[in-house]
Length: 98
Image 1 (cartoon, rainbow, N blue to C red):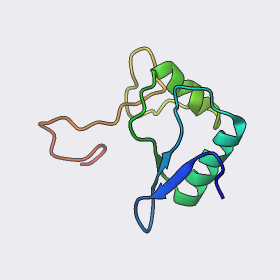
Image 2 (image 1 turned 90 degrees about the horizontal axis):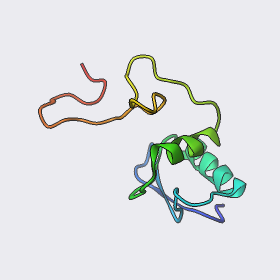
Image 3 (image 1 turned 30 degrees about the vertical axis):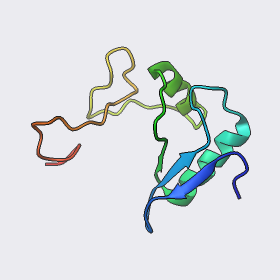
């Protein structure tokens, strides 16, 4: 089904890891199409151990469609379209948790 990437489901219901791609390099239209198919199939996809800049992150995201700023979370100072998702050591709830 996938010719250029490896897709590893991480649970029975949702999510998959995508392997065999360096997001910092050139990404062909075929690879973008296969990533999009993996996301349709698994709803959430993860790219482990990738080292990309915010500029590269946005360039990749734009290949999938328009980028919108998330209105309830402040984005990065120079890249407002990128909302960091993190949990600090003192926090007891998940991101967005109440």
